Length: 132
Image 1 (cartoon, rainbow, N blue to C red):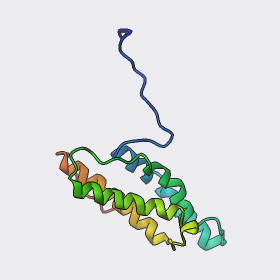
Image 2: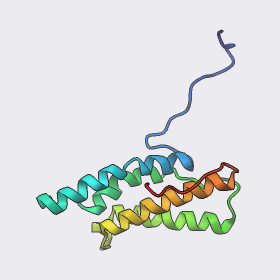
Image 3: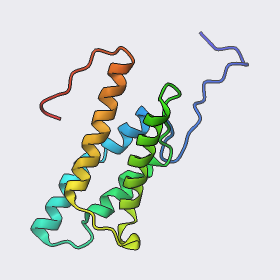
Image 4: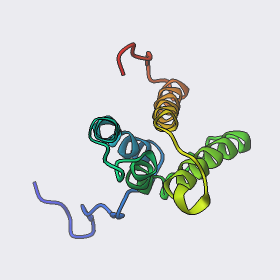
């Protein structure tokens, strides 16, 4: 069945994504890379495999991160603070900020927590996994 000419099927695009759950999901998609990079830094002494470099890549997906309209001002502020912290980590060497692999883990855990909370808030039956 064809669509009427007035209906568009094209989805707008953005280089690194826009939205809430979509941006958090893309950020989390970089988790595997943190394991890879941390291992190479530790085992091979690779100096460019640093936590701030992980934030540099994964953090691209946070530029378009937007709080849902249903969020309270306090929730929007909390999201903006977390986003700013992650984006500051990606420029750590310029900012004189120390970043650790623990900071990476904390950021990933926070993104997961936010997605779980979002499901629960929107009536989606969800349970935190023991293995995440």
